[in-house]
Length: 389
Image (cartoon, rainbow, N blue to C red; front, side):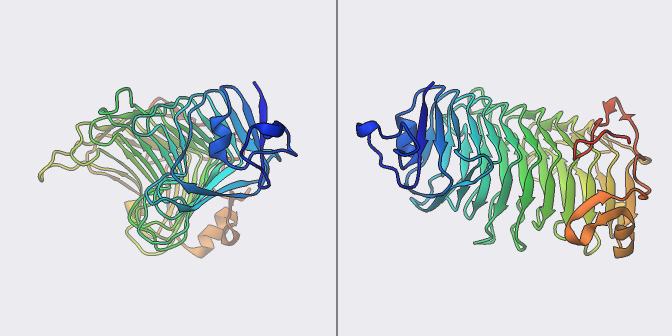
């Protein structure tokens, strides 16, 4: 359980006590990882580190990789890496990463448990990055991954990019079910003009299901035409206490099967969220999809539950679409309101500057139900305050 050090003035060598003190740091993450053991700690001085060549893999268990100054960012810049290479690949179990960002990698920023690698119960706190090629976080064969207080964005160059976070499982990857992922207090913000891809993509990928993922207490500033979130081949996932606002995208949360996939989207729960959908008509907050025919058989969303959602839309009649009719949408606790600047000002503290806390006089305050269809509402709000007050 040794402690090692890395810094921008470091030298990648073992002689002279290099790596054993802040005054004698190593220089690169790849070298540091190669000379660490399970359960070690690497303290990294806040700076920008250039990554070159191929992916840096973390193939250790129980280690901590973090900024030597809490809440001060360590940035790994992958702009000169080999084309097609991920920034950091994680294939070990039970590791903790804090205050680490991967920017501009030539493929995925963080690749967790992908392909032939398995990674269990890794925690990422105040991590993330901006990317210009592929996913910021790709979560593959990695059950119980946690993203806590993370920040993700797309650089917008080029405009046609993949998802910010891709939670993926394939039956062809033995033991690949990527279950019990937790995303808590995420900030997801993108520039305008991005592709049809959603910000968070939960997808069993044709031949598998993903179960019990939780996405909560997060903020999505939606500028993607694909909307903030897909739940495809997803079972018993929970989406609650989130704020979604923006002017782009017609379908903001989609529950459906993957193209040609044999699995339904079943038992997902979407509740206590706020949607502020400005702009033109035709925007749908929650879309439960059932499609039949064509060259492939599409299966439907079943037994999904939606309640206590506050939705501002230019066309409230389209706030929910359930084309299968086999889901449960509470017509009382889901508040559907026609978007207008004056109404937004009546409800929120300072929406013009991004403060979407409800005013004390807002009609929606403490107006939800405690349970609906055997699903209990959260006992605290996005800020951790007791609900109802």
